[in-house]
Length: 471
Ligand code: GLY
Image 1: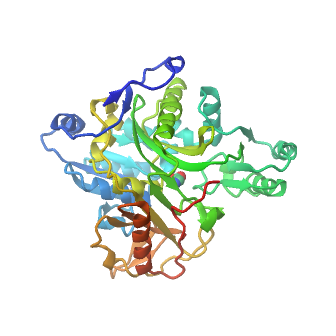
Image 2: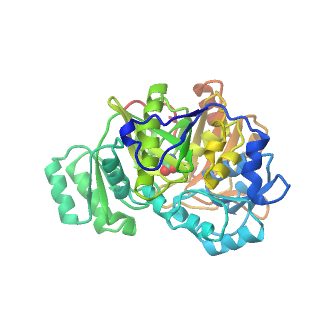
Image 3: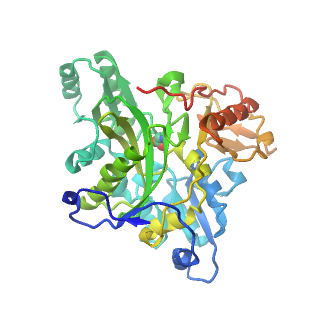
């Protein structure tokens, strides 16, 4: 079903937004043919290149490898576990020259970019310059994630709901602001990319000053922390809503909720994500409608008005407050670990959506993806010490017994496979056990039962995923 954009007519100036695609997508030969025509042959299969090496990329490679229209999924550089579902290629995600050479040599039909760093560095621009089809926003559009200060200005200038915010590049002025803010709870963010670790929720003036000093003075995140953004602390329930877009039409995906803090009860430092559930408890139909119209459509429209047409996946990290949803952050890519729960729930073929987004013809697909109505959960197991320094190379036991489980997948985030075929830890986030269940309790119980069978030295995981209380 294609609907007109549910935005107030006052914001319908400038580039037109054709609509929101929702409901069930039934894969017709005609639309798929359109998707594949760039291959320029009668052959109805593509080779795909997924760029990245984490749990998100494993979930994307796993899902794309099930497409009837995909011959081979390559993943660069991938990881030990990804090699079960894709052919891993030893090219780093930021090595554009060799990625392009590989895509040309293998006649790759579509490249799908997982992480933010290559997007913010312009991988899409580099591929497009060579005439290669690639899924994701270009460098200027990816700034919606690469610069928190830009994202905040965008919200402010285009009436996209978010917390009050203030940006500083001068340490003394930042301290002066905090003094005047009077020690109230405040969020301190490094404006640039910091692998999900550049956010501190501070409850006192001392804590906030320390966060600023770490970023602006001690250089904890390098240049990314030389500009800081302060945000009003919001009460509510977090929720992530992602949408595929070609800059004109949006395809909202199901909702999810991430758990970013390392420890139970949302204590400890922020991480790249310790677990996720889908759907998000806060995402009731009214909230979803509000997010679609006031956040997703509004943002795509705003980016077009700024001359930064946005294609790819737009990730809105939201706080659902009593006054409605508020944008905490935008990401220019699929979330990790949200992608793990979204991919296990998506029943439709992902490929036509990614191709249509990359080619700018999402409106040719008649409806959005079909979803498994069962909820899903994922729980991330991490190395001892993460998100600080951790050891690598620990053998991982218990994975074999889980391969036969139905609707349960162990996505690998940081593993290698040694010459004997043994999986070993190779990162802070090591793996994410992801399962569907007849209800959320069952999905979570299945994840935890599987984690009981897995072991590596120093392994830890949160025991309260999906149990978070309202803030
Ligand atoms: N799950 C948060 C992120 O992907 O940044």
